[in-house]
Every structure is written in C-alpha cells, then in structure tokens.
Image (cartoon, rainbow over all chains, first blue to last red; front, side, top):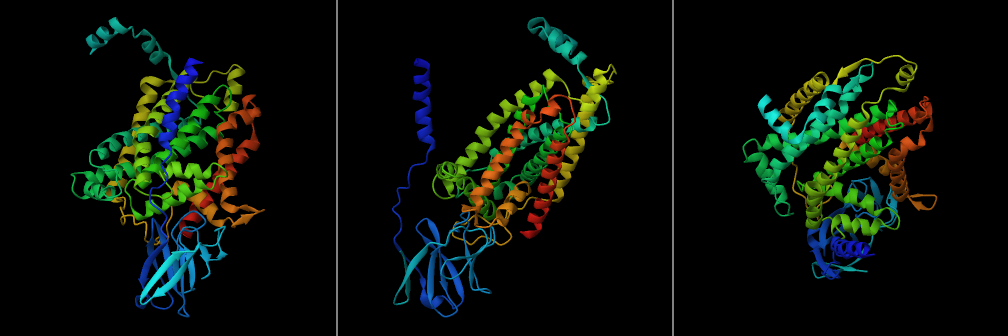
Length: 128
Length: 358
C-alpha cells in the first residue's frame, strides 16, 4: 500500500505537469483584417485572428467572406484558389465553396464562418 | 594488450565472455544475407547518435531560433553541412533498413516460437524509429515540417475519445507552436533515445541468448539429423558485418556530399500551406490513404476510420507471432506470407502514388 501511494504521489504531479495549461490568452472576438481597397476581386488573403489564421476572400462579384482558415480535416491552413473561385487545402486536396461548405475531398465539416463588416476602408472580421 | 586483458580478467573473470565469443556461430544457408540487415540498422542508429550529439552543440530549440540555428550550422560551422546531411540521410536509410529488416524477419518467419519477444521488441523499436523521424522532422522549424506536424498531430487528434487530449499533449497546446517544438525536442533527444537504448539492449540480449533463427524448411532438416554449417561469429561474421558498415558509410557520405538536405523557408503559422506538401517518404502511404478517404464512411468521419485502421494494423504487427500458430508449430504459413506481400505491395504502391500525387 505504501509503495502504491509513493507511485501515485510521484506519477500524479508528473502527469499533471505534462498536460499543457489552457491558454491564458482570451479568444479574439474582432480584428481589422485588411483595407477593403487593397483586396482585389477574385482574391483572398490570410490574416491573424488571435492565435489562428483567418481567410478573407473578395468573391468575383465583389462581396467579402471570412473564415477560420484552419481546415476541418487535419488542421492545415486553407487558401483561396482564384482559377476555380474555391477555398483549397493543399495538404489533402480538400475543397470548400465560398460559403465554407465542403465541395470535395476529405474535410468532414464546413469551415467556421466569421462575420465581415466594413467600417470606412477597414474590413472588420468578428466571431459569429 | 594481453597484459591489460589479463589484468582485467584477474579482477572481473572474463571466462564467460571468452567462452561465448569462442562458441557463438551463425548458421550458413542461402538466406543468410538477411541476417546483416539488423546489424546495418544498428550501425545507422549509432551514426544518428554521433551526428545528433554534434548537432546539439549548435542547435537552439525555440521557434525564434531553431531555423536560424540550423541555417548557422549548415552555412557557418565548419563541416556543419556534412553533419546535418549525414544526420538527415542516415535517418532515412535507418528507417529503410529497419523496414527491410522487419520484412526479412517476417518472410523468414523468424518471429516464431521461441523468438516472439524479439519480434515484439523489434516492432516497438520500429515505432520508436518512426517517432524519431516524426519528432526530428519539426526541429529545423521550416514551412514543410511545420505543416507536416500539423497534419501528423491532427491525425493523432482524430482518434476517437482520447484524440483531443492526445493532440494537446503532443502540441503542448491547441496549435503547433514553440511549445510543440520544445516537446518534440525533449522527445527527440531525451525520451526516445532512453527508450530506444533500453529496447535495443533487450533486443540484442534476446538475439544473443537465442542465436539466429533458421528458415522453417532448414529447421526441419536439422531436426531430421542434418547438420547445418556454422560460421564463427567472431571474427568471421563480425568482419563481414563491418565490411557492410563500411559500404553503408561510403553510400551515406556520398549522399550527404552530393545531395544536400534542403532547409526550405522558415515556418510561418499565418502563411498558406505550400502546394505539393508531403511528409517524409515513410509516412507517404498513410498520408495518401488519408487523402483518398471520403469525408464520411458509414456515418463515421473518414480520417477517424483511417486512423483506427492504422492503429489496428500496428497492433496486428506487434502480435503477429501469437497469431501465426502454424509457424510456431514449424509449419509453413502461406496465409501470413500473403498478408506480408499485400502489406508490402500496398506500402510500395501508395508511397509511389503519394510521391507523385503530391
């Protein structure tokens, strides 16, 4: 019994030590992702949304869309593909449409959508 | 020299070792070439230890300095390029040798009774080698390794129930970051070497205790009274081993000198994934399989099913000696041979397709 308690007394703090602490940084709610005038039609750009990458897309029709740029398959960073006007993940060839829905490939879920607002020339992206 | 040996012998009594060296033999038969693969794997592992220790003198394990320190090693430190290239090339050849060793042991059914534990320790050693490859890949902190680690840890995260905690444990948080680099560094230079040293020692003790296995057909003839010719382990066999090590060293040096390992661009978490990204060749078959799986199969997420299937395959690999009852009874087991051939064809085909598809 004494031996078991010694093992537990040693193993428990080590086990707890190995688990990384929850991030102290609060989840980002809103950022200025870009200047609207700098984003051409049918193009996309990555921006920093807290600790995650975000993707801002200006569709061929001119409307703006923003997403959490982390692929729902295995966490790669997605990018905009102008020739097909789709969002593409280079890791496993996952394809999403401009609503973030999966068109083809292995991603199991749509991309997380973010809310886009324009304030003068600033494109403000917020969590939905 | 004789005086030194006599001095040590007087104090430690080396008669047991002397007797072992004098008596130990290696069976001579048509399949004996495969015996050398284990020694070759061990030799390459020793190269890894030596070059790894040298790299440690300059490498800095932080996200702001890792890439620059490797750049410093290959551009500023004298022969730094050679040490890094040797380490990278030897790692790849080591995994190739380990796989070749495993398949040769598999097809010769050398895992059969009484060598089950030798096989099990070898299977775990192969997993450790893959762990070395995976953790070491991130250490230069370049673009390709960063995203490969995202995918690799993402695969661990796809395991049902325990996946999420496992992913956080591996990454040191929710994302691949400097915390991941610190963990992978600790794994690569401390945890894995300690475990490997322990297992290699066990593996070698098992091999030495039991001697070399001979193919089933030959063992049958031996039981019928035929005497199999033996080659003295020392010096005949060991000299042949060393000769092969020299050849391996020459190949390694040539590869390191003429085909330098690229460093690429520094990792940037906010850059898009470069097209054509792929992991090291030994993970390509798995990578390509996951690429082909549809998002959902029978209501289960495709990658979850894929990860479970790979986990199951790993488990089957470990317990093969206990499944192949015919081999344990010294009978041919063609079903297991077929299983090995299918596994080999799958790995070959998907590695090649994965290479060109990326």
